[in-house]
Image (cartoon, rainbow over all chains, first blue to last red; front, side):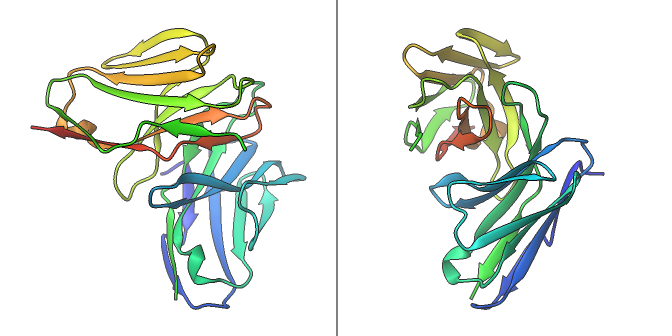
Length: 114
Length: 111
């Protein structure tokens, strides 16, 4: 079984709809991250969480919210989806050493907002 | 705005050649550096991590770090068609709280 899972893997929605992307991990990591990837722009950080009570905005948090329901679960919500949120979304996890540790990525969710 | 810049691609090399991928970063406080490989439509997977100046070798891959020049590179020796992918450079923020990714270099290894 995969260590980092994301659901759904693909989603088509309409402008103005609220949607939630879910991420679960079995790696036992404290740190979890949400990124979006657009062609030619690499990965951009949306939100990150170092534990259930520590949630932080990343580079592009506007229009998104998150919930850390448990150590193993980190959800990303689009309150009112818009077409420019069409992208590939990745969840990642890492350990919590002093130095930044390797991030492990889920398989991604491909989102299309019409 | 902390920046991570990668040499613009796409990069094509013949099979068996050395592929050289380069990355510069702006935050002098950065301590951790990563190279990820991403196949089309797939998630990034770690190739190499490097934390100290110098070279680090793992099989056909060598990462090179020069903190004074704020430069990190990845060399792929004996390139194979299966190495064809986008390579992402990632650098920590210096406070070890997040990574900044470059936009990636697309590598094609021609048979």
